[in-house]
Image 1 (cartoon, each protein chain N blue to C red):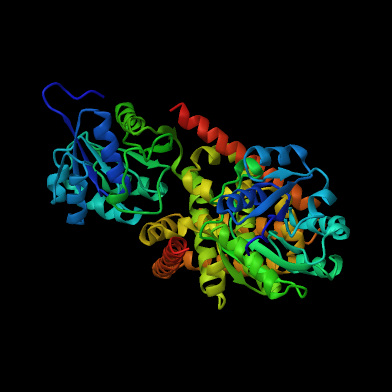
Image 2 (cartoon, each protein chain N blue to C red):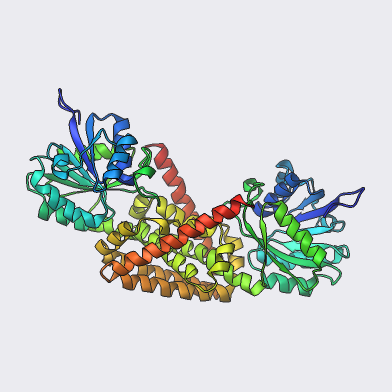
Length: 298
Length: 298
């Protein structure tokens, strides 16, 4: 959406950490014509975002940051979003487009319906990208390149609002993917939240074992990669688990059953195991290839 | 051990894939003075090893490859080792040092005691390094840099043989770690074989789900890393599981209990979860740091 002649549209990012900061960098590089304003509860993080070029300017006061905004992107941990919505609701301009980047969507869409004024248009968002380091210092303009960006329009969202949020996702190099909030939460429970918990489980199992000293010495690149997600932000992941309990617990149970099947095959003569391993390798290799092709054609 | 004046000691690598090929490259670069001979059941793989500079020459015939060898390194999948030992036993020179690079050690040490002639000195080995791509095309001289190289001397090994195998590990950039074969197998079950099975389990869970098409689209770098090990060689991993059943099944059961504990915490108010995630992050970050320091001081 081109800015109206004469003045730039204002886009305010609330929470300029890894995701908010990377979005700011990407949008400023894409030259969509937004004036990008950054706000963060941590003043030092906001200042760093300014120095790194992730925002055009910062506002230390939340009402001042959002009152003139045409678009507000809330990029905080999930559980903070309810409070942020309450804090900013009285100050939003009528017609303002609000989106977020949180890892779960059903609760966020509910909060938007409940808290945001009817004059505001909400489109939930979730870019499928990240890394285990947090904070704006780890932000990069290319973080979303080739990624899927899930979009869950609220009941207040019209076509123009949906298109504006989709164009922001595309400007960051991602592909918009429209999905129902409950389905979104089940999908990410399987491919994102369960892998995080698997990773935490392995670290706990190994590091709380009486032989950790020896295990740590023998552990190599396989252990490093299998545990990478466990180095992620504990607060963000606590929020994810608390706002996506049912889906996560369902997938954990299904995963434990899968491990039991593998354990049974290990008791066999090896033929079933080799078949299971070959099938998994083929499925994973195909997915990696398809993902590479998608990234190249974005 | 310096070569005797006048002729180079011959070191034969049986199985010049990722591990055997990388060892050949590392040893030739280190200029230990060995004449490195390569043998592989797949003639094309042996030829490729020669072209890539991983061996000085190849021998297509196993007896010819080992009969003049001072050191034999068996770098095949675990289950092939029993047959390789039977095939080469009649041709080994008295005093020859035999080692291997297989992922499990108890069975290999048993096979060595049972099959190799008493005049031969066996020191089991396992470099804790690898990647998900197999074959000599993926070999690199730096593969073992900073890695732990487990060593399990057999009853026939004297100090000179142990020192020669340790010096080979050091020349490849690794750190020798002497360990009992049964303990080795339990350690690697926890930090290497369990992570592989976790990875396979996640790929199977996701890819056999009726919603895989959507999951595949939403899956991102977290899924990629959590499933990386599932792209490993199916035959190698089948052999690992079959030769290390008891330890692996014990760790799978402990891991399932760990997941059940996490599931219970997810049902709580979030405080236990955040603590669990913070502890896991700290343990994992410490391990990564210590590993980095070890690699730098190797």
